[in-house]
Image (cartoon, rainbow, N blue to C red; front, side, top):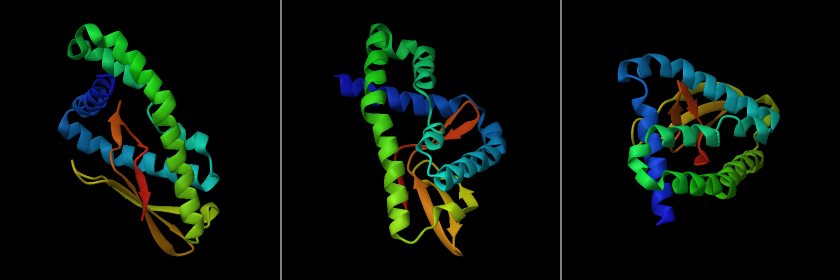
Length: 166
């Protein structure tokens, strides 16, 4: 039951994060927001800073606020859902985020990426079922980071723990 609540919470937060901005406004604002997020990801990788990268992920308070805004969805289970989400966020989500960052660094180093020299080339926002891709270069070779499900919260794109280096 608790896993179901957490999955439903994450789904609701994703849907709500897209509903907070009118679709036309989201398109107009998303390019600049995507560029900011992509440049911040590149900087975090360049500095090899898990702290900089973690700052690009939504804070637990952002999720809890969204849960409060959708209290009707949770009914009498709101407080229990929030407690369970906080535990899952701390025990599973943040460690997975940190592990994915460290894994990207290790994979990239093995592939010959000199992280101190990387430069942002472009960012491509994915549609519903397509990943968002950040393209960067190192030593004149291009690489791609694909984020499976980034979130758009309060006018900013946020990274997810689901990222692969291609």
